[in-house]
Length: 487
Image (cartoon, rainbow, N blue to C red; front, side, top):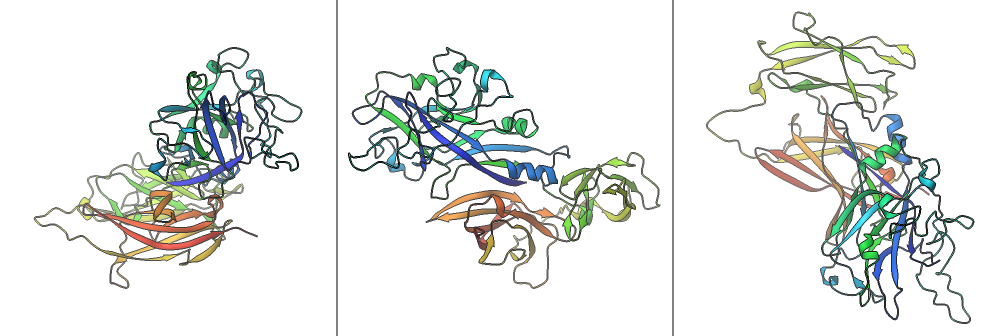
């Protein structure tokens, strides 16, 4: 499993019945209520677009592949609440006098197309505003205030929304709330929770071409809250926007299955096993024109019935997988061959590739006895990233992990349940960038791919986790490095 982070290409908070623009504010405030002396009456909505170019590139080159039966691609919108880090802020007011919202629901909606026609998504500009209020004095102008589009009424200088605010919460007009496409909804009990909206169906439809590429979205309170009367003030919740100067820039987290679990060295009787074909050109993975076919031959060299010309799948770029059913009834150990055919590259046919593997008895991976094993300790060596290396944010690194018994120099362990995770540090807090993820296992190495292109420049840490004999052990800060901007 791997992740890809996609970031906003524009965002704005629009305020009901107002021309104010806050597109460049580092924080978006969603508010509702009847206001007070210093607060506006009404409510706000947040609108945004997502840059999916890197995901599209990975789909095009096969890094993300939907070829295998267990392939998947999920997408979760993540935004950090500005109150998330301090519980003392609960049940208090914001610096501008608003009450902090609690016990509410937010919706994620698709901004309606003009006349409900997908050929005409509503295009809008982010704007150059920062503040909600014009605080200029008679002499100076307030450069942080702007009423240039987009805003509640306008998408651009020349164009208007089909309905002010993108939709009507009274369920009237051509763009009523009831006609909205609600992508997801989330309940906030305390008001300091982070946003995690599931956009999997929406984004997959967009990537498949079933939605126009200029589709954008919005976040808002339910209409019942937007229209709530009788409040004694304004209630708000804040999230960091794409203009934040912190690490907490909002993003779409795409998770996809590219895990390699090669059983060639540990092909055991009585269970399903996986074999792989790795295709390189000048040291880099490359895709074949078609999916290879696989035929398995027994120790006598005869094709096994039912295992002839089996279709493989592409797990990721240049890596092809076949899952074989459990082998039974053989005297072990014994050797089989796997022949990969239908190999074409650039329109040219390539010769078949013949590999071999040894079938072992099931007891090779299962131990039964009267005693338990002592938990093992491990040592690690790495290649692909140097300790404390400064890495340009355009790099893609293959990080190899050599797993050994601790306090030994060369006793490597070839079959270990190993995971890694990536995080940054904010004071004493570990902010997870990629949660625990299985490390790829091939016949000759453990490795994972780490793409710097979708990571925010910062100092990063990698932990390793080993599971064995019912014990899970985490080895902290195994790799430490920095991602820096390319000049």
